[in-house]
Structures are given as structure tokens and as C-alpha cells.
Length: 178
Image 1 (cartoon, one colour):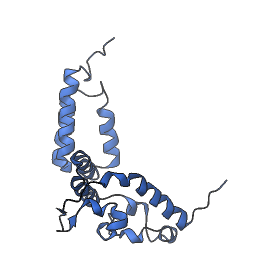
Image 2 (cartoon, rainbow, N blue to C red):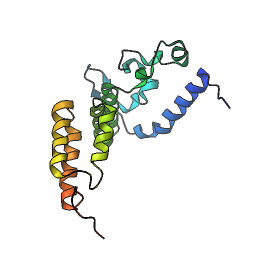
Image 3 (cartoon, rainbow, N blue to C red):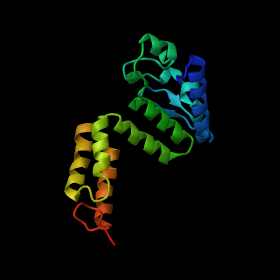
Image 4 (cartoon, one colour):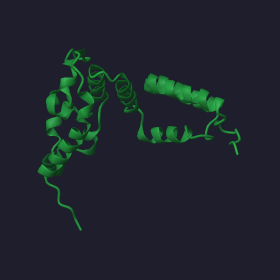
């Protein structure tokens, strides 16, 4: 049974998703500047509704161009729907303005991860599973993240994981506790 999608259905789905996460920015607005000098506050959330002018895809497509009609005509492609580091930075600024610095840090970590190829992210995920890597391999991964991808926050997490895995005997070659 084929499901027919129309632009109104897709727009409603996007609205529902955005509405579901809208509660994160209810704190009093605190102005923050984006790299372009734009002031972002908790009131700018959700950006797709309140500041779509800031949202540009990886290939330069504006948020308003991401329509079902443009998908069907081939004017936009899957790549145009990928989130950009800048969009995540804007979200991080809004999170800070809303008083949620931990969410902001996670968004900045996610922004770093957009620079890492998907296949490499999956390989790193598997390498971070208990007993899959030794400490040197994890520290090498952290170095790669920092130098090759400029992912300093992610590199810090991997270094921390290496230390925790060592303390908890979760490195490759450590025997799991019975």
C-alpha cells in the first residue's frame, strides 16, 4: 500500500515536531550574538518559524526552498536537508539564552560532528564500545578528531572516555568482571 504525501502533510509533520521541542526555550530572553552579528534570544526559538532567514543548507538552499514541490522537481536534494554547523551554533546560542548551557554544549558538539564523514562517525561509535579499543587507540581517535576535524569538544569526550574506561577496566584486553 503506497502512502501519498502532499506538501500540507509534510508541513504539518514539521510543525508538530517543532512544537514538540518548543518547551526548551521558555526562559527569559538573553541576547547573544551569532557569528554574523545577529542577536539571538530564547524568543527566536524555533528558528524555523521565527528566524528562517538564518537557516541555509549545506549547498546554500534557504529554509523556504525546502519544500515537497522542490523535492519532487529535483530542485533540492537530500543533502539540502542536512543540518549545518552554523544552524546548530544558532540553536546553541538560543539554548544559552534560555538558560540551558548543557544543551548548548551538546549542540556545539553536534556541530563538530557534522564535519566528520558518516562512515567515520559509525566507526568511532563502534570503537567507543566497551572492550573494543585500547587506551592508545582512543587517544589517537581524540587526536584525529581535534586535528583532522577541528572537533575539540568531541576529542575531549573521547579522552575522558579513555580515562573512564581505564579506571573501570573497559579497555580492549581487560577482562569483563564476572
